[in-house]
Amino acid sequence: MAQAETVSQTVLLPNAIIVLDRFHIVQHLSRAMNRLRIQIMNRFDRKSHEYKSLKRYWKLIQEDSRKGNSKRFYQTTFQSHLTNNEILEKILAYSQELRQHYNLYQLLLFYFQEKQADHFFELIEDTISCVNPIFQTVFKTFLKDMDKIMNALELPYSNAKLEATNNLIKVIKRNTFGFRNFDNFKTRILIALNIKKERTKLVLSML
Image (cartoon, rainbow, N blue to C red; front, side, top):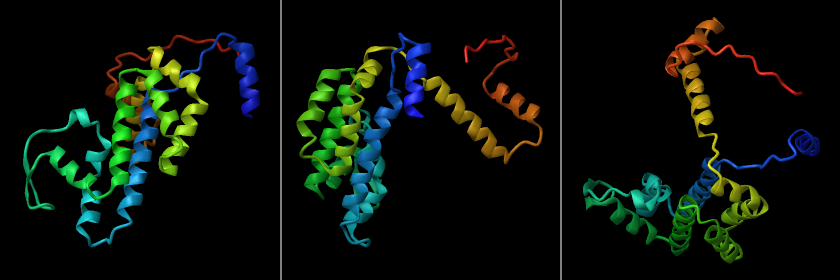
């Protein structure tokens, strides 16, 4: 099947350039970081302070460190007023492996968002032999599709709007528990997307 698709692409679109979606590239990294956090969390006793902290503050490990909130709030887990960065520092102190992979994750995010493709792949190649197998799997995928990821960083194309529209349609469908009438369903989508008039222009297909 994959071979047939490749042949069709070569014949019908000889000058096509494959561009991977940037959102899904970051998502791969984010999921790897989350899976590693869970792996390390499960090494602690479920009633321990470390386990509860790693479970509760998972979002701090996932988010971009440059977007951290500097305000201080009372945290019941630590029974003191702390900023997000202070909480993060306490959590990373539980495991050297977690700290190393967190720093690697943040550096990869920085290179990717700044579109520094050379630094991004150099870092992957330099660390692939010594990282956790969870990250190794992701790194191997990235290296296999290096040319497509390079295109994603160099070209402005993205399917972000398409993904957002698709997600909106799924939310509408879930909230209404299904529509009996398809026209009503379609109308609700057009209203949500602020489309006043349905497009009726026909598009001819080559297939």
